[in-house]
Image (cartoon, rainbow, N blue to C red; front, side, top):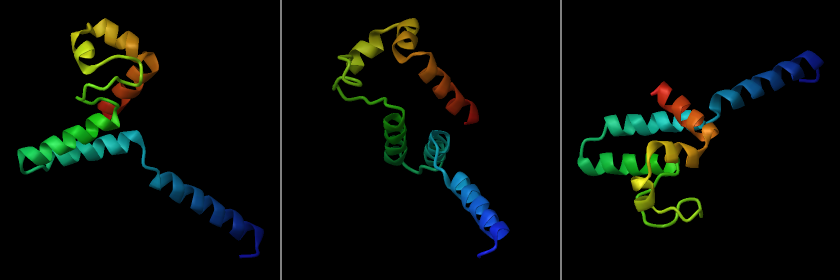
Length: 102
């Protein structure tokens, strides 16, 4: 382990393992999709859907969303263009990237 090439190889292997083990939003979304597909009861499916909604910041509670004063009732009544404007282009791109892998 004292040889410089061995240290370099070991560091590269550690970096590769860290990269492979990273749990990304995309992988988490995919895991939720798999949980929904493998659910045997309606309650299991509901739990998977609720977890996925929390993952993406979407909940059905009447609390304000992201402390901006928007409730779920307000969000349901908004047009698609207003929702896109509220979320922002970067979040829309992120969500579409997640959905494209599913």
